[in-house]
Length: 412
Image (cartoon, rainbow, N blue to C red; front, side):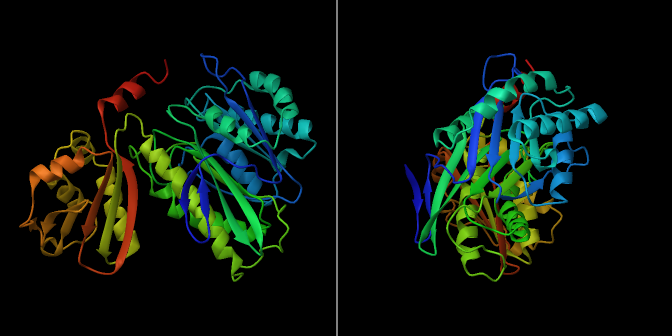
């Protein structure tokens, strides 16, 4: 199904195969319930890989391993992701477990272990059962395929508290050839910028130099995954991999000044934004998707800081869950964001409903109409600070009793 169309990029909800990527999913038994929990992706020899990882000071073992490998090279030949165990707060044995998994994948695919990236998601503080993964890996290696359905299966296998798998594709025409881009992600709770508790992988068959891919990955992360917050909790395991297999029959993109880079970046960013917003919509217990847009700021950093403060306010989020037009909570959140504001210049709108003008309730304010708007599933809160031309936005969701129910029973 086509999701979005413009002159340069078409988003397709059903994932498309990417030349140079084979993948498979299976069950290692890391969950109590029988379900897939292991994904293996294999890339061709020409592939370059870039990634952004959590900024947490307590980063998990797979993050430490993967970050170290990409610090030395942009070449990677495989990515192994497990759900059911974060392999975080597991000390030296945890790092050894990640290294062992990389070595096992490397042996099966005949590639160096330092060309194998590792991702994990699940409960923190539990040792990773390497033996279970080792038992499952040969079947995964044997089942590697370039079939499009494998992407959907992979998106489902990496889910934890997610209620829906997250996968999407795009095509963009460069030099007369269709470049295919496909991405998958997981994330529902412990979601906050820097990045979010999420894993994501986006692969393209475009030929892109490693250094260009790295800077592209940073920009895409900032424009997408770093704009999501569900609960303000940054995870130990966040990772986003961007893969360029180089299989498309076009000349390599090896300079920031290459005009083709803009088209490719726009398509990859569209994929990442779609996945990031899907994470917000699938927030634990969420019933509403909320877009918070801040304009009229002195700089973009101030705009994002205010948007993030509003998005992470339990008072704002619970009011939204109840469809309560308690806009004063938004004003309060703006005031504590640590950014200089002038209340006399402040304007706030909910959707098309004027709420605040010049720091006071708008003359046309209609609480009944606003309450009706808040009963919808898609909410936009627009703030204009009246201080400059900079703007930014953050995506979040409401906060319901469902969030407590899900997290209170997570380990059971």
